[in-house]
Length: 254
Ligand code: ADP
Ligand code: MG
Image (cartoon, rainbow, N blue to C red):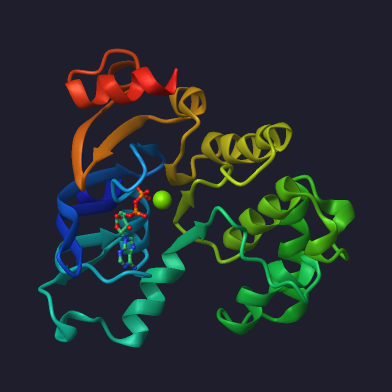
């Protein structure tokens, strides 16, 4: 596979918080148009890895390539990229969090328009047309003028997805996007993620929904204690794990 077919390439990524080594030499390739599910016990470093991919957290060592741009981290403040590089990197990755993080004082439509207008400097009319299209895509055409507080968790999360898509990312990152939802609201959010997968959106999903990971992911990555223990097709990692740690985790999930 040539490098242009790889959307995200990670080599030797390391991150510590004080004396706690949270990511220990992580390497991972995400082919363009593929879906990677990151699974593993709480505290294994999944969120930190996602946050490193869009530089909400700056790694201590290793390399991350998103699209054509590579950043090498050597530790210390001098490895912090400049604002422009940071902004470019972040713009390529849309992030969806467990707790939506919508702007509470803005309507649904304004939430989705905000980034394109203020960051991408799009004309308002164009940003609004795109926002309406994206809200239709996530099934919320009728809710454009609502405030987030009036919505269910599932609706809020779909707004958050539309808002991330409005920035035209080449990759979408989901950190336990359904973990805060009531069980009856999980399916509507997973449905949106699945339709993005069908359209060929490159995605990295941290999820506890093992059945969903089996269905939607091309590659499943099992992490524990800051290392990738095992990765491969869902049929391997979920159904026929090679490693004892993966077997133990899957045993608890079913
Ligand atoms: P996961 O998402 O797999 O549950 P995290 O990446 O959130 O794991 O966390 C991995 C470990 O790093 C945990 O022990 C967590 O407490 C620690 N950690 C995460 N972020 C920070 C931070 N900003 N400061 C200190 N410790 C952190
Ligand atoms: Mg997490």
